[in-house]
Length: 547
Image (cartoon, rainbow, N blue to C red; front, top):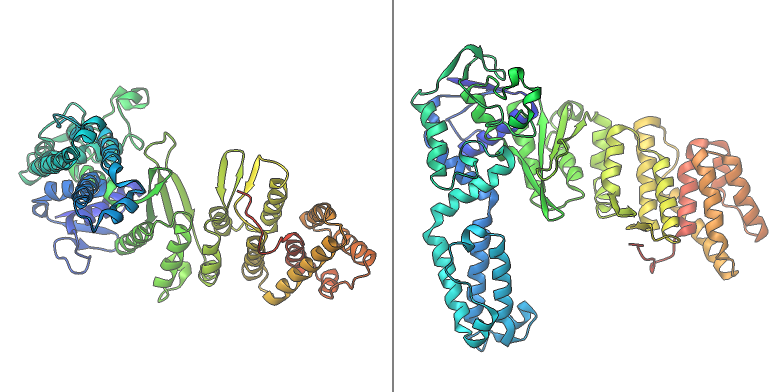
């Protein structure tokens, strides 16, 4: 029996990937081929029979290019055939937003674009029709698509092997079956190097070295550290100067190597900026918790809610573990972000969420989600409010200084093209409430006032704004706002109140009674002051987001 214990985050991703590959659609409790311990998995080597097929199938599905292209071309073919049906002409024309006589040419352009990024398929085609060909003979498009689809189905196995190689090369470099020079029998090569040798006990071992990962099994002879790990994580031939004896060969056993070869299957995928970003949740509590957390993250990532997925994830994780205290369920969690197209090392977001903070995220789940699309730009750099907000919540650094900064950016965006804000004042008032609740629940734990008081002051600020506009003094609003911002930033109650009193007295208005409370209780100065300021700056329902 082989026992695999939890280890570093990449190894843990390999364990999750190995379970997903081996178990296919089965869950942990319904299968009987792998024993699930508290911090380990255990299995007989014989269960690896058929592993290579499962491994390639899983990678092929993850890449998904073949199926996407086949489905796309099949739909194109159906649309071309529908051009012969007078009842469907309008539907096809609307679908491509083009005159019916030009639909075939539009489809040809899309097919050529796809083929240019699928060179393995393009190189198999004897001829690709031109626009002139299609104009002269519209039937040629139907014949061509039929030929391409038949070719893809006929050579499925070859595309299966090629796509797996292309996909996995991004994770593991070009060693073994992933080498660019290996253009055929990729599956056979993988099977013979890994599965066959393990099942037939053909592995040659180092005499004097044990595996540096498990510390128990003998090291596989000649194993390259980046064969089963990854170029960004281990050593390779380009970094010999950093290697022992100038050799990028480190002792690792065949089972740990196999686990590392599975880490790609343990990652969740998020599409971003026409690329892929990969995520993994690492926690050292147990195999089951690790497996469950990553399955949950993958489900949320599949919803394609790019900016709010971390909030969704932590909320669901908390809700699903209410039978145990959240402070134990959410200790020692790390979310790893991996961009294979970048030379930057993986980002690691380490979280240790106590019970009250977990409760805060759950109780304000909807308010946090409402900020998911809000952003600002400084020059060409875009930042999302929710991501920064969540970071500050987890780091215990959320405070009114962040709101002050966003308000200054909002005002600056009205004067300079260097700044753009994808939020409005109402959003900042919601943020003000979130900060007030966070400070009260995490630090103060003292009931000071209700939400309705904050909204009361917000509307008082709107009243002052409307009065200034009716008095043709709208140009004063920005200068007043900056004075109030400066006072709020340094916590100067006297300066803030002096500005307020001068304005109200000059226009013979009654000063809101809540301001009297501010004078005697500095703890409510910031939430009340920002509420009033937000109301002063609100432009009404017609307010535009400056983006």
